[in-house]
Every structure is written in C-alpha cells, then in structure tokens.
Length: 476
Image 1: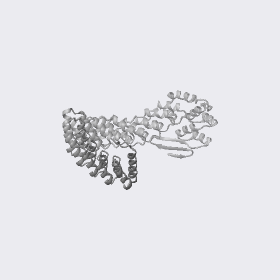
Image 2: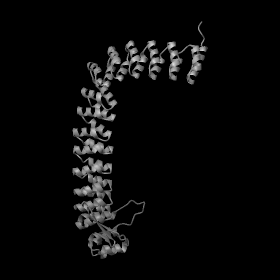
Image 3: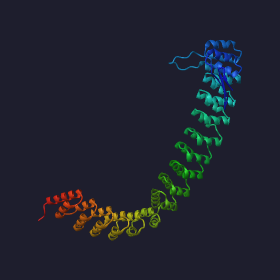
Image 4: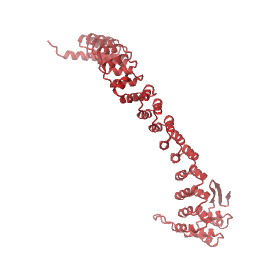
C-alpha cells in the first residue's frame, strides 16, 4: 500500500483504490507522466484540470492511455452557465468509443473517467467481479453503482455491499441479488434500517426464518411482510402465541384454522384484540365453553359466552343455564323466557353477576323481597330493591341494610312516614337523611330536623321543605 508523494493507494474488500492527494497542478502532471504504477498515472490524468498541462500531457506522455485521457479531458466543454441545462457531449462521445477499447482502458475508465455516462458504458463491458464491486461501492453516480450491482455475482461482495454501504439504494439492490438463506436472515434480523430488513425479509422463504422476523422485529411493516410470507400453520401458531407485538399476534391468529390453537390463544392472551380475533374464528362449542370458563381476560370470557349462546339452538341454549361459566349463564338467561328459571336463578345461583342479571327481569315479588333483604351481594340487593313494591320490605332495607347505596336506593322508594322519620333521625349518612326528608309531610317534624340535624345542608333543606308545605293551601 502507499501514502506518499501525493498518492494514496488503499485496499478494501473490492480491490485497490487510487487517490491523488497532491494539490499543485504541476505535481499532478508529473505523477501522470512518470509514476511507475499505470493506475496511479491514469488517476492523476483524471484529476488534472489545468488545460495547459493537459495539452502538454496529450503530446508528450509516454503512456498512450495517459495521452488519451488528457485529450478526452481537453475535449470536455467549458462549464455551462448556471441557467443552462447540464450537457456532457464529450462524455457521450467517449462512451461511444468504449466498446472498441481494450479491457485495460475500460477498467481504468470505469474507475476514473469524470463522466458518469462513460463509467456506465464501461460497466456494460466489465466482467471482473472485483472491479464491479469497486464501482458498486464507490462510484459517485447511483445509476452506475446500480448497474454494477446488476452484474455482480460474487456473494461476498454482494454481502459486503448489502451490510456496509452507506447508500440505501445500493444496500437494497445488493440484498435483492443475495440468495444465501443465512446471510439474508442475518440482515433481516440485525440491519439497522427497517427498509433493509424488509428487503431481506422479502427474499426469505423458510417459514421458521420468517417466524423469527415476525416475532421480534420492532417495525410493523417488517413484521407484516414476514407474516404474509409464512405458509406453515405451526409457524403461524407460534407467532400468534409468542410475538412481542399484539398486531403480529393478531395477524397470525387471523390466519389460523386449528380450533385447539385458537382456543389456547383466546384463553391465555392478555391483549383483548388478539383474543377477540381468535374467538371470531372459533366455532367449536366445547372450545368456546372452555374459553368462557377459563380465559385470562374477563372480556374474553364474556365474548366467548356471548358467541356460544348466540350460536346455540333454543334447546341447547336452555341447557347452557347449567354451564360452569358464569358468563354463559348470564347470556343464556337473556335468551330465556322462563320466569321460573329466572326466579330460581335469582335466588340460588352461586355467582352474584348471574343473580344480578336474573333480578333485572320480571320475577315474583316474594322472591324479590327475600333477595332485597338477604342476598349476600349488595349490588344484587340494590337491584332487587328497585323492583320491590312492599313498603314494609323497603322500610326494613332502608333502615337496616349495612351498605349505604342499598339504604339510599330503598329510602328513595319508602313512603311510610314513620319509617321516613326514623331514617331522617338515625341514618349516619346526610344524603340518605336528606332523601327521607324529601318525602316527609309532617311540618313539626321538619321543624325539628331544621333545627337539630348535624348537617347544615339537611337543616336548610328541611326548613325549605317546611316552608313549601306551609304555602300549600290545606283542603277543608
């Protein structure tokens, strides 16, 4: 290698690279005329811009190729004005001569000619893989680089370009010519740019390789490109179970047909969109029942139950009232018109959500009263209170229930004045006392509350209600 006398020669993966580092025109002309290395002489002739020195070289240089280069440089037109379109007539003329040149000159011009038109013409004649790799790696004109890649067949050169080039179009053109499965997989898994990973993924065909990309790539477009190319059902199932990103799991699930795989995904999935995708493809009643009973997500259990009951015929729907899954019993209740079944469920179902669903329908008043007084779940008692018409039951609940919302609900329905007075005096919650006061008609009692209640709000409300009653004319 060399780095002296105004010349730098370096080696890379594609061969030798020649640079003229001299800055004085006379030194460059001397190198072009007398350097011992022909490639250095050619590079210097290409780098020379002084027209007088080029004229001298064209007449006196011992190397015929150097004289030809100097003549070509002299034939280049003067730089056009800024408003003129760029014209490379000299380049076009030299390009037309390329098919008649010997390969040594073609090689020299491919590296050093200033015109991309000429360099592109030389690529058409080049077969040397090192030269083609050098052009593909270093040429300043993208069309020349891409043309060189089209002719490259050397796998190591293509791999180096695909992984190391700083130009995206070069990397992707090289990727497009790679055939080695493991090289492509390495790029698909590790390239910094998503467009490179996606380009490599489109070249992969093995489902296990594509699965690795789909499971882990951080870019959605790359993940979906991999998924679209997977044809193996087992690989899709593994993506649906293990991919980091929900969109990949959902897309893979949408392509599955195996009931067991779909059931497992719906049961264990932590993202509802993925679980829903699995359930929308699941038609097996036993699988749906298993998901409704044991899915990790409550929403998935409910959706499985809804699909199961909706798809059942009336006779089967009736049997689902005995399902082990509470969500199934709830949806089965909604389809049932049997009042006796609803009544029995409201009193005896072990799950409060099912009892709550049963209470919301029309059932026997005696049963409603028992539920309002004794059900273990406050929400169920509160729902029953809404439908109870027995004033004694409502008063008992309003005075004795331990849960504030239940007492409040019942108090709003009580009309017995004695019960309302007891509530207004005794309940510890100001809002419940105020609700009782709203239905009291005894002016003297209201005066007592207006003066003695610990809550300023209740006192003011009682006083205002008493005034309202006093303004109402009494019937004689």
